[in-house]
Length: 131
Image (tube, rainbow, N blue to C red; front, side, top):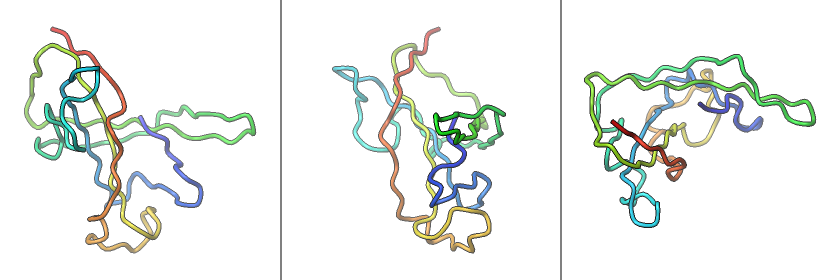
């Protein structure tokens, strides 16, 4: 799930053809932190595993005290071939690379080369998979 508005000064359009969604899973390490440093998961990464991304509006919004609301979208990654992870604790993260500079809207006239330099977040959630 993700915030559909982002920053009002930098509008986010999830349908922009230059956006590159990504999902990663890291094995759990000592002290309940990811066992591998870096932004690409060591147990799974959509960078290395073929599949397709799809997003949809949830018709749910986060509403703030000032009345401002944020639409929430659902992001799904469908694997081309099934993959099994061993039972255990894992860290999961999803992110999107958006074009550097300019607007991330679909009418921004951006070049594909501008997607090279992006900031990607750290893993953000601990999940547990069981058989």
